[in-house]
Image (cartoon, rainbow, N blue to C red):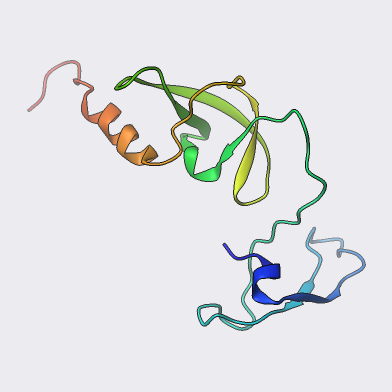
Length: 131
């Protein structure tokens, strides 16, 4: 993820309306290319607005997805974790708003999330028989 301000960027132009068949509006930016951005590329852009107060948010990296549902892992003690379903709201590309599933003070795993997820899956014993 890049911040336009870090790349000496500026807005060049933008469309005034979307067409009847598309919800997209063309926007053109100019910035100093650090070498790994291809000219003319289409990108996902997050427009930042006024900061919101009284919101619970977590880093995007803390969220995992399984079958269309979103989860985070809560730390219960030194070695115990719980998978917690969350409903997500707005995102700025770095952090995502949690609408439900967390409360203030919950300890959320933000680094090593996939290691926790893999450890949880590997400790599950399959039921039935195997061949």
